[in-house]
Amino acid sequence: MPNETPKDPYRIGPIEPLRAEIGQVVVNHSTCESAIHSLFLTILGKAGLSDRATRVLVKSQNMKASSMAKTILALLRDGYIGLDDEYLVRIPEAIRGYQKLSGLRNEVAHWQWAVTDGHKGTLFNDLQALDPKNPQTTEHTLTTLREISVGLVAAAVVLNLCATAIASGFQQLWADTALKDIDNRLNELRAKVAALPDPAAEEMPQ
Picture 1 (cartoon, rainbow, N blue to C red):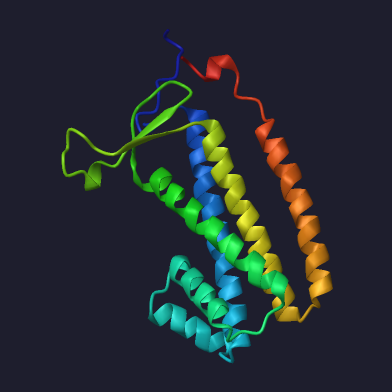
Picture 2: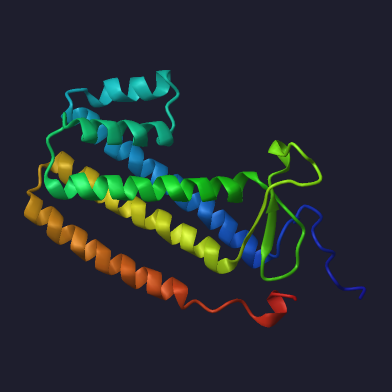
């Protein structure tokens, strides 16, 4: 039709609702990395390193959140940092969640999305395929992308709370109560996200 706006040629890949969730995964992953950085500063501070020295270390060694996470886990396993039991359980649990979801985020952000028009988006790992005719492939839906996003938010919230509590010297009882409250709120969030309706049929062509 003459008055129709032509489709933007740069909007490649899956349909718009999926692209929006892809962006949310990337944003939430960045938020989780920020939480890990905050906890890294706090843990290294407990080990006797100043905030400035830790920041110099991160910058000079070009440390990524993944390296900071591994360092935090190593220090907790070593027992060098004296923390209450609840932190010794919840911090590794949240970091392992981040590590798992970070692998999925890397697929979402770095693999090549096919041009699709259905409810599922298809990705190819073309850049690392030994056989170009048979690259590694996977699929994501609105549901799976939302699950990744919520999981990253959950990890970020727990890690930020632990960083704040440890830096402030809050007692374990406070941490226990606060973390239980956070768990309840996150469960409510998961339920709300799971109940989100899919976009209208006209937005999701078959």
